[in-house]
Image 1 (cartoon, rainbow, N blue to C red):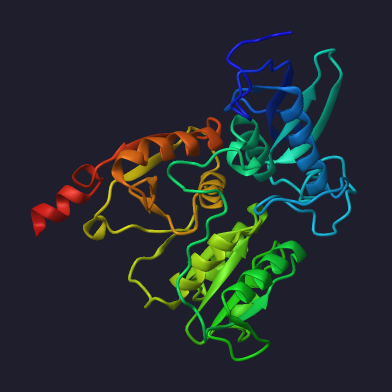
Image 2 (cartoon, helix red, strand yellow; image 1 turned 90 degrees about the vertical axis):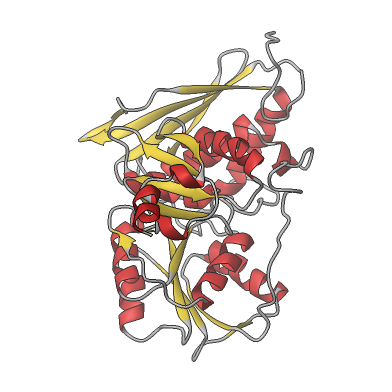
Length: 360
């Protein structure tokens, strides 16, 4: 039985004889190994392998237990096609992964997963301590901490089909004493789909009096872009977390900014002149899907962190002390698994900052 550096998932110095292998795939008429990304392997102890497999089974709707906030959910959709994500039941666009649990005896159990579910599984395999409640992230505080402003009196309308996301939104609003109404809301939350639901909803009058936000999955880029052009203030990802929804409601209440949206990533275009904090700059790898990179960063960054497009790169501004930025960069780089490189950049070194300072 192998005893190397212990199990990364639980952080204990114990034997980690299980292998979690991840083979990135890309669609070239059929699903083939992705030449832009290398296969990855995580070693797990017996307890963590069983725990992670159980979480995936719950997400698939095949296991008993309670799902954690932010976990994927099939939303009642049935698995019909071989190349359908076996976790969230979505159809991957052109990138996916085969993930396999390999026992010490060589037995294999695997799933076909979309990019979002792949990143979720890989992130827990790399470090699942905070989710299991055995450790706190230094940069995040206790897992599940949910700082939110006073939004009492705000009325929200939910045009959301995804049952799991709708349930999280309803519970979050209830805990904040935010009223969920059918008409005449301050903020409308609309769901982007491959059918164009979000843009159609906004154009036909389902808009909040003070702003609208969009809930988007990986396959909904076109509808998301159209909804942003139709006046939505911001967007968040599916699965939904309370922190993401709270941050989106706050953003929708702010006065509309002057920056536009970068069309490929659907990220707001940053204004270097107004940036006053160090950032983590992500440079997408050659051949990487830029929207996928942007979506994953929004999915796994905290809701109150800022994710913007800055001069050809993606700038994440975490609301943490500057000396904690390298830890944030390392965590997000791990989640992206080769899709992008990351570096911490000070305010004066930001792209475009020098031009504004010289002009000012």
